[in-house]
Length: 441
Ligand SMILES: Cc1ncc(COP(=O)(O)O)c(C=O)c1O
Image (cartoon, rainbow, N blue to C red; front, side, top):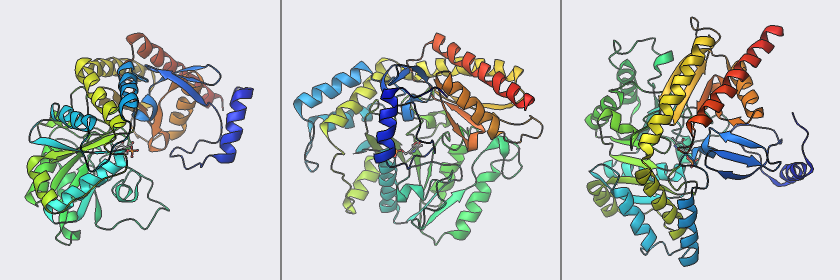
C-alpha cells in the first residue's frame, strides 16, 4: 500500500476522530480520500485517477458531474433552493411531468423522496393503503434500503444484530438459477421457486397480504438475473391474491439495463415503481410512481407522506435534468453498447480463467461469479476479494458482493470503448497476479 501523503494523512486523521464508521463495506480508515470527478473518472487527494466502474454509489451512472446536472442545480440555486411542501413549485411539477413522459401507462402519478429507501417505504405504504393489507414479501436476495421498514424486506444481508424489525414481512425463494436453492433447472422447473414461495406465503399470511417488492435484476444480491417470464408470473400470482407488485427500479431503471425500465423485458407494467440512484444524476432525489387509480384511492384513504426536502426545487431540477439526459443522450442504447462490450471482453477472460464461473447482467449492470472450479461451483470469495483489491490499487473501482465471490461492474454511460478495454486489461492482469500468488503460497 502506498504511503499516505500529508494531505491524505490529514483527512484520514480527521475521519478517524470525527466520522461515524457505519459503512456497508467495512473498509478500515485508510485511503484513498476522493476529491473530484468527471465522466467515468474519479480523483483522490493525491491526484491519482481511477476508472469508476461503480459509478460512485451507483448514482453517477449518467457520468460524474454531468454538465446538464450541474447547470440545472446552479439555475435552481439562483432561483429557489427550498420550497413549502404543501404547495406546488415549478420544478416539482416539471419533474412529475418528465417522469410521466417516460413511464408506461397506467403509471402516471409521482411522489418524491430523497433516497431509495424512502421511495420504497412510500411504495409499501401506498400498497398497504390501497389493498387494506399490511404484509409485504420480497425475494431472499433482495436489497431495498437500510431504513427499518426497508431493511425488513432487504434479505440479501444486514439483518443480523439489527432487530427487532417491523413484522409482516416474508422472504420468497429468489430465482437464482446459477445456484437454484431448490436444485431445479430452468425452464423445466416451471418457476418452482414461485410456487414454493407462495405456498409458504399463503401458509404464513394472516390473510392481509399487500404487496411483493422486487428488483427486476438483483443488484446487491449478486447481479442475479431472473429468467424471462419470472416477473410476469410473479405479478399474476400477486394479483390472484389481491396483492400489488412493486418494482424497485432504483438500480435498474432509467436506461441502465438497455431499456427505459428493467420490467419491459418481461412485457409487464408493475402497479408501483420506484426510482432513485442515478435519477438526479448524483443528487439525492427519488420517486414512487403509480397509476391515477391507485393514487386516487390512497389519497382518499388519507395517505400523507412528506419529508422536509422531498419537493425542493433544487433536487427536482436535478431529477428533470437527469431524465433529459436519459432521453436526449439515448442512455438505453449507450447502456446496451457498454454491456455488450464488457460482456464480450469478460467472455474472453472466461476462456483464460477457470474461476470465472458465470457472467451475467444487462447494460451497465454486469457481474461475474468467481468459483474454485466450474464443476463444484464452490464460491471463491478469497480470489474475488483479492482481484478487486488488486484492481483498485491499479486504478479500477468496482464492488464485490456475496462475500467477494461476485464482482459487480457499473460503468457510467460516459465510459468509452477505450476505457472499457483499459478496465478489462487491469482485470486480466489482476486475475493473473492473484492466481500466481495463490500458486506460490
Ligand atoms: C435496488 C435498491 N433499492 C434501494 C436502495 C436503497 O437506496 P438508498 O441507499 O438511496 O436508500 C438501493 C441502494 O443500493 C438499491 O440498490
